[in-house]
Image (cartoon, rainbow, N blue to C red; front, side):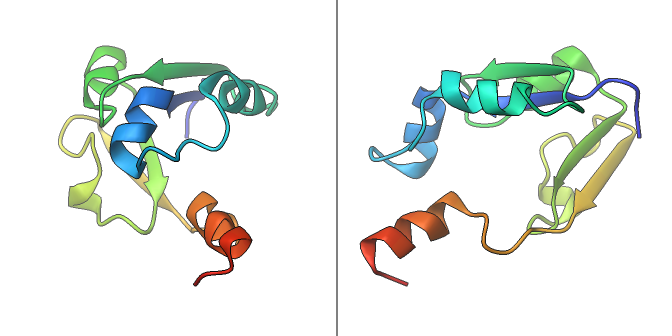
Length: 106
């Protein structure tokens, strides 16, 4: 879809606001390093806001990619970027699901 892949990553403070005080599991520098180690990722950009709207309007990407668990019009960037791509969710790779499994809850 493009020649440069920029991944927007919530800061620890942003994740805490959105997910609760017990999150994130891994600190932002570790999460950023993991993403940066993926050969297809060119840049990892941290954002402290609750949504990446400011980042998207500043970078003006050609494409925003989000999981299919979001409806197109719910995706931040809808109406701002030329193209929204929704990708399949990979079952079993959810931090929330992992936490529930560890705690023995469903």
